[in-house]
Image (cartoon, rainbow, N blue to C red):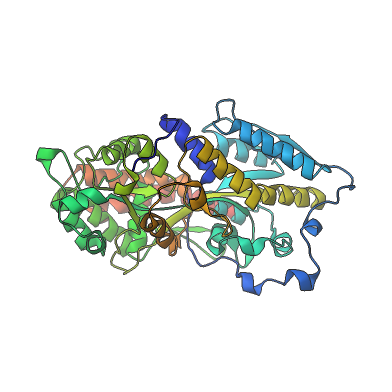
Length: 472
């Protein structure tokens, strides 16, 4: 069965789907989230939902939030209605909504921070949480979170990227998981059992090789080699038991580009391309082209996020032909998936009254009511939602018809073992991309040598300065 989408524009679909993301995101190390069982009982502590927000007759509190929708945003009407709903529910909180420039959000935010104009609440991506926490840009909201009566309704893993040393620094807003999307029909036609093929690196490479047929213009795996190549490459480093960077106890960064895990991961990339010849010819083609190869039946598999199904279906792919699973296990025997999304962070320099108002605002926009409004909006407009949300009490499948249980199970299983993106990714990405591209384009290039070159340059141009600034 095919699900027709009302909007076929990729940009509009992806933009709208961003609302429903359940980690460029997420994730860096899962398992460091707050333990709900260790938090005080709400009734024993005498807390209520109203106790976490200003009283209706309280003096007005004015806050600034950078979340005003753009004129061409697909969900603009919905967001404006939700703004009005918040004003009705919390009349003592006056919100000024500010619109940002697309593609310049991070730069604008950091400029505001440096100039003492940080907004009271800001929707922040997973990868920036660790450095922002280290730099004191995010307020410690642990006490407010512990007093929040609905805290146990959030997935424990949704707090991972916002938790440091047991303290919480962000309200979960959206969440997604990135793992392996595969064409079940192509696997069946090739006589390949997906479960066996996705067992480990070797079985996957052999299956990808078998799925590659130049005469049919088909190949096993769409590898990402363009300017965001580190986005997917980091997953393979995790599967080999390592990471690309380490955040030290004092907050400083240590590069691990040349670790055994990173070298093994890059060698695997090299093997997929040159030994097994199981990738596309143009290994530096765009992500859009990788996706096109998948939904047109040329690529049998690709790394993908749990909020990408809508794009594939809108291009004519049958939902019943799509499989989703954790990536094949690497040398470590593990196969963590990247988790990402957004958090609302609060200005640590704002008054306590403004911080409480901002917290109330943030939790309103991740409430069951609001998330279900967004899912209903998706259904009404023919959009396929992300199958993960930050809350356990929101059933996404109620808003999608014809969804197979194995697809839902695949997404949920991929989310069981998650990992946050590597520390300082925003600054270090170009340095990791270079050796990946070199290996994919030059069969004679040596993985460790290329990674060493990249590490030397990144240390000199980024890490030394970052660490020095942190110690000032």
